[in-house]
Length: 174
Image (cartoon, rainbow, N blue to C red; front, top):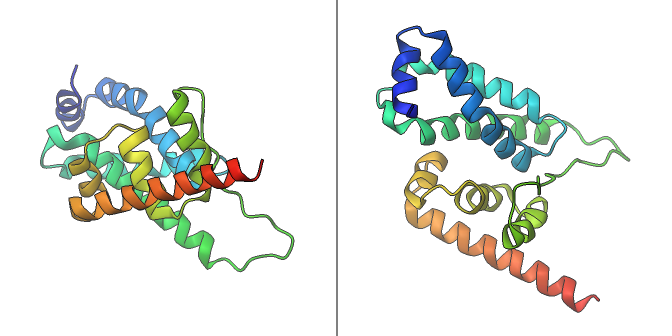
């Protein structure tokens, strides 16, 4: 059953359709959140995403655009959490938890990218996750991030350069 049909069924009040939609998309949302924020609060943030999805589902005008809409909501919740984290005063001696990639389902080159995610700035990390690890097209990444496709391309290019530089620096340090 397609996401579009599940969304339509959800809007008609079918709880089974909602349960299936959540089952199908919970893990990808959780992985995205974990890669952006780290594991400490990922489950809580993913739950916030699903609450926002539940509230917003009746207003989704294009059910066929569910995936970018879902990731846009996830992005918004992640950005709000990042704002909260940056607004908190830093406690001396408290190490800020960085994003820890989930390597279980990654192939070798993806593994290398995922391993380096924590060292990237949030914007570059986000487009790298969406494009390379979530396999979303550039247009969907642009829609999710609320920027033009060209901006996504430049952020991807910058992220790739940063990952490449980190790999080269690690190689020189050996």
